[in-house]
Every structure is written in C-alpha cells, then in structure tokens.
Amino acid sequence: ISPLVGEMSGRTEGGNTRHVFDVPPAGTNNLDRRAARLARPIPTRRFAPSPNLTVENMIKFCARTRHWHRQRVPTNNTYDLSNESKMGVRNVLIEGVSGTGKTSVATGLQQRGYHVVHGDRELAYKGDPVTGEPLNDAARSQNAADVAFGHQHHLWDIDKVKALVDDQSNAISFFCGGSRNFDRFIDLFDHVFVLDVDADTLMKRLATRPDDEFGASPAEQQLVLRLHATKEDVPSAATVIDATAPLASVIDDILARCAASG
Image 1 (cartoon, rainbow, N blue to C red):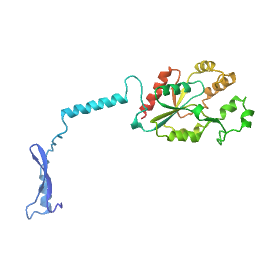
Image 2: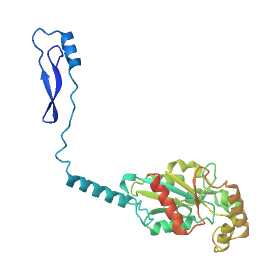
Image 3: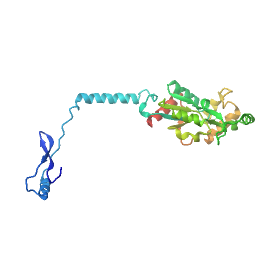
C-alpha cells in the first residue's frame, strides 16, 4: 500500500502487538506524516506462544533427541555404520605392508556385519605398474623367483575397484589390502588408513606365516622390512592406525574415526 495513502503501525492490545492500518486525516502532507511516525513510541512486541509448544510436547521432543543420540553414539564402544542412511555410501581403503594385520582387520569387520572387499584376493593380478597391462606367461615365469619383481607388479584391477566403489547397495565398504597402483584410484575413497606396527612386532608376525603366504620366506621378509622402513609402499596422505593394539581395539579405532568424520 502506498505511504501516501496510509501506514502500518503496531498497537499493543491484550499483551500482544497487532498491526493496523492508519489512515491519515485529510490534508496531512508527507512531512507531517513522517514527523508523526518518528514521534510515535516504538511498541514493545510480545509474541503469544504457539499452542503446540506445551510441556508435554517438549518432553516428547527431548525423549526423541536422547533416543537419537543413543543410536548414533553407543556406550559399549561399538560403532554400527552399516545401516547409517544419513552417511550415504562411503568407501574406505585399509592399507599397510605385509604383516600389519590387513587380513585380520578385514575378517573382523566382516564378522561385525560390514561389507568388506579383500583386495589381494578379489582384485589383484600381476601387471605393468605403468600401463596396467597384465603380464604374459613368459614374463611371469621368467621372474617367478624375483621377490621384488613380483611385489612391484602386484596391482589391483582399477575397473573392478571403480565398479565396487560405485555400488550403492552398501552404506559403507572397506577395501583391505595393498597394491602398487593405489595412486590410480585412491581419490575414489572417502577414508584411507594405513596399519602400522614396530619392526619387532612385524618380524614376529611374519615368522608365524604359512609357507604359501607372502612374507614367509627370508627374502620376502627382508623386502617387507625395507618397505616398512622407507614407507614407499603405502599411501603417504593417510591416517596411520597403531596395529600393535588388540585386533578389536584396532577395528574400534577405525570405525570411530569413520564415524567422527561423518
């Protein structure tokens, strides 16, 4: 409504402010109306409470809030992320040199009901670390005894990694294992963890490995120790997890960090 015709003003009636339309008397000019508006005392606005804002409704709201927090922050040090729809689909990479506990953590996560991809079993192949092309039989047989060669050509299938990352059927997926081409797909992951232990613990674990597992032979153990010292074999921009702790604590630590970062 044009101010030349009338103005809105607040009037206090019964404790509440009511807006009314003031019609100026005939013959009043704009300056008179402005002066009258400036001289008018500013009313104290008081708002009537909503009829829905009752003590009973407030109690119900507080109860729902407490229930929501109990679901999100359990008191028994377990973190259930598998059904957390608010988090959306997330993918976690768990890396580390041989003997740090990647397989044990993967198995423990599966036992808790999480979706786990054993990368060294499901995604690995021997290929060229530059081109990604699989090695032919001649190259594999010619370098079969070369421990370092086999390790350097241990790759993950990038197309399979992308397909699993794009899968929307799991709220969170854990990829456990190591590869030499992780730099080609590491940006696909929401979290990257590296399991780490001291050299003595590492050697004790490798000494108990079956003969058919990598790290059991003396040559493989020497390679693992060198890679452990140089850290050249694992992602540098990752969260380091102390894997010398009991397995349950290591898993709790990973899950807590995933939950904290939302």
